[in-house]
Length: 316
Image (cartoon, rainbow, N blue to C red; front, side, top):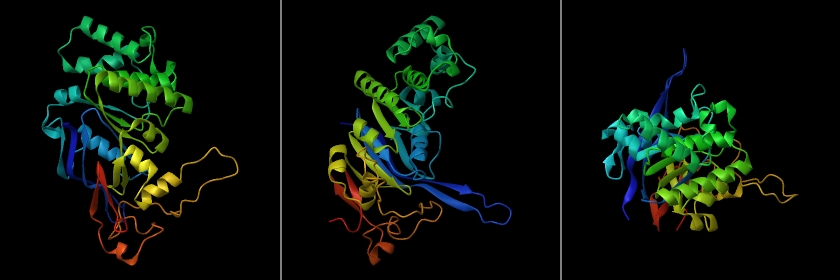
């Protein structure tokens, strides 16, 4: 099966100004990231806030340019593509449906925007495509006449999905698409995304911090830490037998509804990782509960696994 998304050695850093007296710092968002997503597959990317997930999404969408490395979608270099051609191939669904929608535009006009931008569709054709897509995501023609503020959060996210799919792209990048929604609405949106993937044979890159959501939607899972994939495995394998200590800690951090158990202690401490000050050796070793002295000096190689691999010196 051919790769819909292929990322090779991508690195992206940002310069953060230090103010009047401080020195500028360079934040490493993605560090030599390589992976591929098969056509029709769903890769879930998980990790703590600030690990580089959203930067990776924007790089794949062509909204950011990598410092080095190459990103291709269906064999075409993202940055070499015409913007209109890229929009026909790959589309985003972002986290906050209210922030990503023009508050002064009618819903039908918001969904029509990608068609209008292409400049090749007539008014009647645009109206028909918009009405069809709104109906497909569970919105009525009457709701198409409203403003975003007149819809619920779940309905606004349906609008964002309709806008992303109205051009019938083949790849969708979902960046925390349900995190701003109520739990009951999350399930509805996830089921809708799953139905649309099967119906249109879509490929998803699904970014989330919610492990339960990723387990539900993804065929493979990549765990990101300080700009790198430290583990990638098929979903069932990763959740049944995680190998990297960081993956194990993430899974142990999931809250349980069972009364009396309290909040889990995953042993990672209170200090968050600093992407502007990446430690030598294994970047996870300062927080790793099983780290050995060599972990602070040796960079762990990728140990291949079916469908991915693990970056850890202590994993056989």
